[in-house]
Image 1: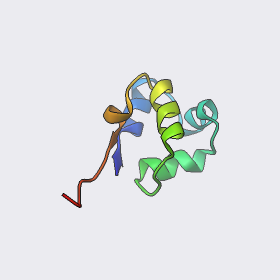
Image 2: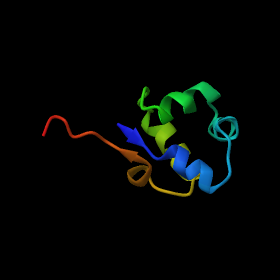
Image 3: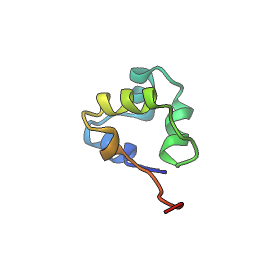
Image 4: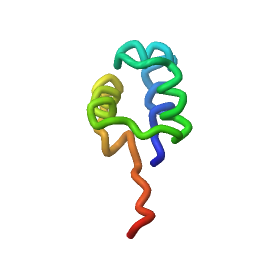
Amino acid sequence: MKTRIKEFRAKYNLTQAELAEKVGVRRETIVFLEKSKYNPSLKLAHDIAMVLKTTIDELFMFDDENN
């Protein structure tokens, strides 16, 4: 799964730490998400999308390897 979190963070001038605080996770979680090394729960994906004023579909691109 790829994300556009970094792109949207830049749009709103948020640091990884600021985004993490707003969604209630550690900064490292945001780092792992941005590097596509962690798949978020639906709640976390929703919370990040809300803070970044976008949708989950716009923020996360799910790999379609099985199709």
